[in-house]
Image (cartoon, rainbow, N blue to C red):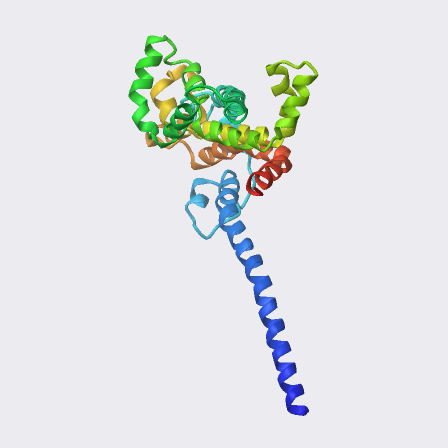
Amino acid sequence: MAVLQYFSTGQAVMLNAYTMRTRLAPAFLGVLATFLFAYPFAWMFFSSFKTNNEIYQPLLFFPSEYESDAYVSLLSGELPSGASLPFSFLEVFSHSILASGSQALLATALTAMAGYAFAKYRFRWKNVLFALAILVILVPRQALAVPLFEWLTQLRLNGSLWAIILPGAASGIGVIFFTQVFRRIPNSLMDLAQIEGASETRTLLLLLPLVAPALVTYGLIHFVLSWQEHLFPLLLLSDDNQVLPLALAKLRDSSHRIPEAVSMAAATCSLLPVAILFAIFHRQIRTALRDFTAH
């Protein structure tokens, strides 16, 4: 009996240790992933308060003194050396907000309507058009640069913000995403709305609250992708309509001799819109991703 009790106790201890390891392993990996993700952003934020000498000291994470000179220089456009920034940060920031926000709203509206049509209606060339939406995803963006430049030049839109707003509103991924979203909406709801005399447009508007988390999620994702786009703004925008990715690249130009803290401050400010939007809509994003992957 003593031997059996000893082995039973040993098995229980081993089982508890195994259970503890299986519970701690995901938690440890989660903490490690969070650290690896957050460390560059934290370093960037604290570096915006450092001097150049402190930034180039790899073991110094926190600044010796918290000075807001970099943010003052960024917003005023005047550097401590007396030189000026090669652009107005507030103007460039407003251009990015306008371009990315307009592109996200327009893309969400167009792709939601297209996805609704693909999911709920039968029409000629439906499969062909859906295949074209998939084909758009497979074509590299670089391959579209020259034709897009020529097309916008003919429309006399080249150089303006419309040059990146209108092409960016076309999204094959958005069409496929909303097609899957609306397929999960029962057809009986459409039939009920039409029995009540609702038009096709009115029926779609009545269904939109049911897919609100998907609308918010896609709109935010499209905003982030547009916010960080560099190639098309570089090719299509004039110097008077610069956006943040182009401005941040100019700060790295050594000929301007921009302090590193100013570059870090600009990068930190460029993250604010995305961080604010995620903080506001994170619940809707979780809901949409959970619903989309649950089926």
